[in-house]
Image (cartoon, rainbow, N blue to C red; front, top):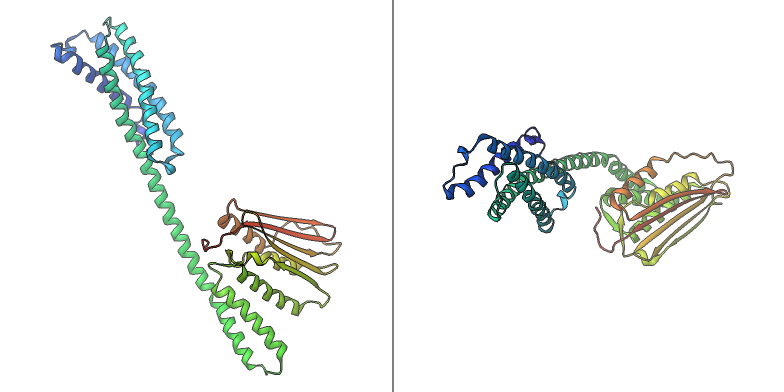
Length: 349
């Protein structure tokens, strides 16, 4: 509709001329009257009155179009009929008093035929003009949506290309670890076990990262990750975990839980303990709470790491309006609390 803006306030002049001429042709010609032979003052008064009427209704139409623009994406037959009904009702309430006023100024008695004919012609013209403007508005919205879709497809293609390129290094590392695994003597069980666990982590990240998995698969990955972390940490670390078995059949975006667990292992200190608790609540909501001890003199850094920032972004995209994420720090304890609404079938990714 923007391309018609320069004509938007000129069109009422032509509308007034069309309506006035149409009314006169229908009412006067069958009776043998020639309205163009009347005093020019009468025709001028009618045209000026019709023009004022057209501009007033144009202002109302501007308001209506602006108001209805936000419903363009959700437009259906019912809403469209309501829009046209409003146009017709307001038009009929508006035209009849205007016709009476114009006839008063030209000293021409008004009868029922004048009102009916004026109402029909004016309503038809209004419906045509509103259809033209509304159709243009819908077309603009459609074109804008197509452009947005093409932009999203372009971004997705670029992201996929970057993802495929980024896979090269982990894939190379995965194959290298397998090679090293078979080069280590079978008697050296500890390093072989460590490499085996690292390979499992890489395999999961390589092949399951781009779609949803069952919560059970995600828990298995978390457990493998914790085993690897415990190999490099102090034996004094106290680790308590509870994964609700009721969560197993539900689906979740892969690697969604890792950032909170990873953050706990990264910053654990003080009494050196970590508690991880995942439960199924009412409404298919999963609550995950990760607690870890921190040093008493830990620096209060409000800036989150890139892993937590990416997690927040993922939740906003994948679980919009269906998640909760908060962090609490008090009395030597850091708590990460997350809630998300789960599904039992793959609808994510």
